Image 1 (tube, rainbow, N blue to C red):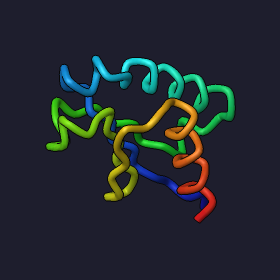
Image 2 (cartoon, rainbow, N blue to C red; image 1 turned 90 degrees about the vertical axis):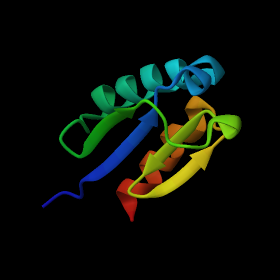
Image 3 (cartoon, rainbow, N blue to C red; image 1 turned 90 degrees about the horizontal axis):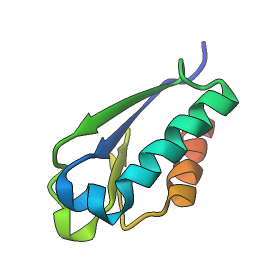
Image 4 (cartoon, rainbow, N blue to C red; image 1 turned 180 degrees about the vertical axis):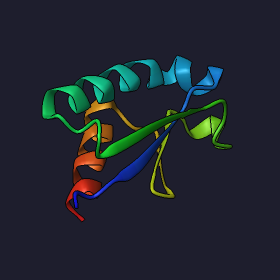
Length: 82
């Protein structure tokens, strides 16, 4: 059985303004291009509680802050390999 991970993306106004809109688009494109939609549950939140450090992303309980779209994809790819 393929590994399944949960990716939580903060969609609150602070994180969204700091780049999570671009991260969301990049992650959705990556999942579609790689055929990973069944392996990744993508969840949006209004706040992950770290507004000043955004944009914020959580993968299976591990938080990542101040990330770029490329870093988000790298973290997802790594989590799928583990």
